Length: 112
Image 1 (spheres, rainbow, N blue to C red):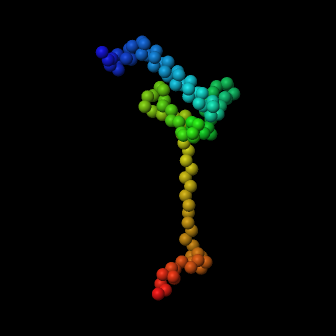
Image 2 (spheres, rainbow, N blue to C red):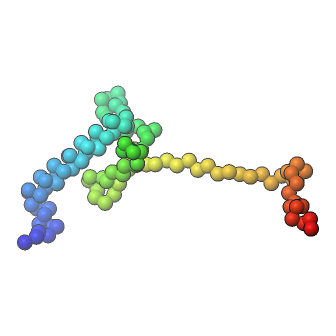
Image 3 (cartoon, one colour):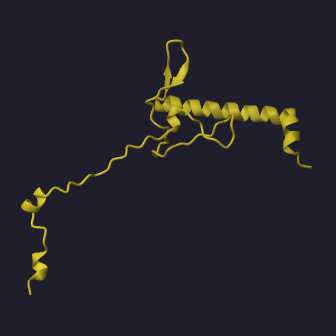
């Protein structure tokens, strides 16, 4: 007979299994961060994630989104989980000077 969510929260075996999965998940995440160079050690010896850390990616260059192991259904809010996009737009000038330089009329279409 399946257990309800409330019964699972009280089940000691389930809680140990869940904590073991969470620990494995965090260890895997730490390995990925070490391989990508995303972990910085500060003066106190603590491991932190630098603000300029690039997003986590796999070998193919695909972004790796990591779920927060303590808040199910939400992503981590660490700097390596944010993709920064530079918006570059092209601005075209509409200066009357261009009319003096370029012939903008389609004169070949009017010749019959």
